[in-house]
Length: 65
Image (cartoon, rainbow, N blue to C red; front, top):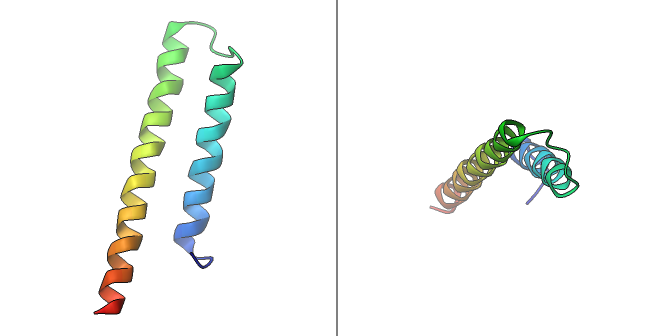
């Protein structure tokens, strides 16, 4: 994918998701509430990633038509 606003946002989402995952792996969550919050953020970022990826695919298909 060429460097576009979409690719920049997708990279930021991936980086943040990886940061949180590494924090969870290292036991950074102080309690279950914080663990749930971190897991929820990963879930939200993952869903945003899917939405943006789908949008990019739709735009590519529309350009090809």
